[in-house]
Image 1 (tube, one colour):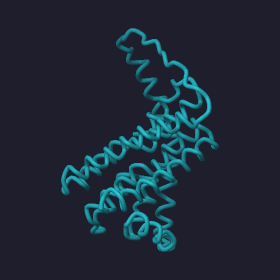
Image 2 (spheres, helix red, strand yellow):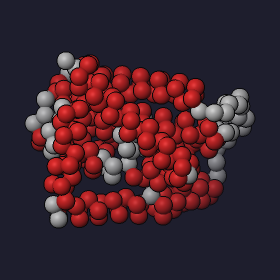
Image 3 (cartoon, helix red, strand yellow):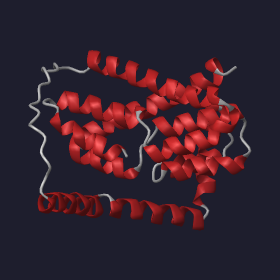
Length: 231
């Protein structure tokens, strides 16, 4: 899950470092359920496509980190952290810690996920996805070479990435289209729980900046994969 990854950026000293780390994690590091679905979806077409997704993500992490380090003002202080001696924690303290963490997730992330599921069901029930697919079909098909039906999976990926990848299976996509779709799901819009944590950790302004970077990279990478890499 990307949520603990974003939370772990608290150990970094500067706001600049936290922004870079959180943005790179949200764009270039897929969660474990998504990775399982990617392997299941593309594995039948050979290791070339599965490895291609991870290679693309690795390049994005490397290039994006270098670019953000160059263009963002400020500096990166030396990172030093004291590692205390390891000891077996008392069960009472461990239980209290576990209770606090689970309670925090249930109160903060779970309501947002449930709200997202409710919104998706409303959109499906009133057929509002038909309007959405019609509006974005020229972009999705023209730039990424994907059918308009894949838009639904890309939107649902904002709430559940693994479910979104599973929705690509019945569309009869080619290996190239599956590869592009899986890559776009991996780099664009992490789940809504991750967004909630990013809002809490980075603030509204930096969340908007990170989202704009994410959209730009998604469009660029999807177009390059369609027209340049996979020809």
